[in-house]
Length: 515
Image 1: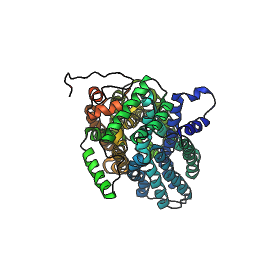
Image 2: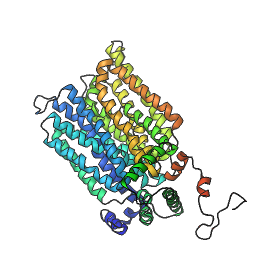
Image 3: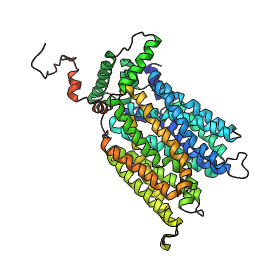
Image 4: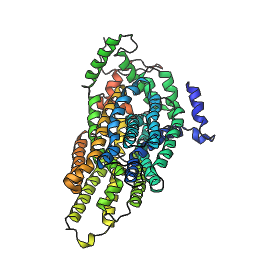
């Protein structure tokens, strides 16, 4: 598809009012396509909270043991790893758009299989397919948004990733209170189909086109998305210059045998692993994703009803409280969009992380006192535990669930954004499985209070490491972030430019000796 056709197609789905033709609205359209797909993935996360209680009913045609229930909830985490391995080479080989389209196939197949399932095995297979799709979209969604939006609004757009997950969880939980899980699966599948239409009309990422040497096409799309002024021109030029230097130092464009390509691939991987711009972001995201999962956002989404009954009491209206918490999560995520625009990433992360740890301690202490009958009579009511859960949910959604997705789209250098992004998301996938699978096991083995203390301790350890390692990325271009991680200064970039720049402008030379 040529750029002119792409522009006509994208604009063809928008209202004719010229205000919809601004670069900002085009960036909104790209973000909306990614976000709607992520909403469907949020439905996958929240679906187990309505599926598992339904399977326990006597009239259900499928019945599961407690062990099978935990697999239904957590198998998505194992499948995420498979999706990570699939998407890592695809992002660089076929581009962001085609990779995005490929995520639709497994999740749509999973929704259809859920509708047709008549056994626990069928449910697990469907969840595996959906988990694969989630693993594919995990690194890809943030990268697409980061590469195609302006640095001034990038943080707010990237926060739409966590916001979309929240909307998906709320949507599936709300549907589960009034409809059967089969009807919920059917309705959720329409979200995936709608996102497919939007993805078809989206352009390819300019950053990926630049990495492939397609500079003119990248330039056209870049200015279509971002507008054309001095700042945008400078950003595009810096990206092109950086990639030209990389291509000159590589064997890009050479014809190599299969064996030579394999050897070169291994040599490239082991050489790349020693570069700070490669391993530093991966280590940062390792602690970021461990913190994210053990903060418990997917645990409470998967076991919402059980957790509410354990903390508040068996007499609590768990379904109503669950939906109320989802609404709070949605409101806080909307607030996070504005916080990410006006406040530093580190400020938002460490503030919300501290509140999360205190909330874990508060919930664990309350449940411990209640179970050991040492809770004062004045505290024997539902409002205190509900308030503690509410504060906990606030801390999760205001920063802990939004900052990691924002950072993941910003922190990886373009040269190995696909490889590093795919590898870094493996901890997210693995810890999704560990946190969700072992939560009920730990609850039975060491009781709920100590499980909360353990999870809170993991969050605290991760925050300590991130305090010393995490750079601030707000309002910086992706090239500036890349240069800082790779140890390249502005002077280094200037020294790589020709002395006589286009237009006749002479660049000053730092040395008085010329050879």
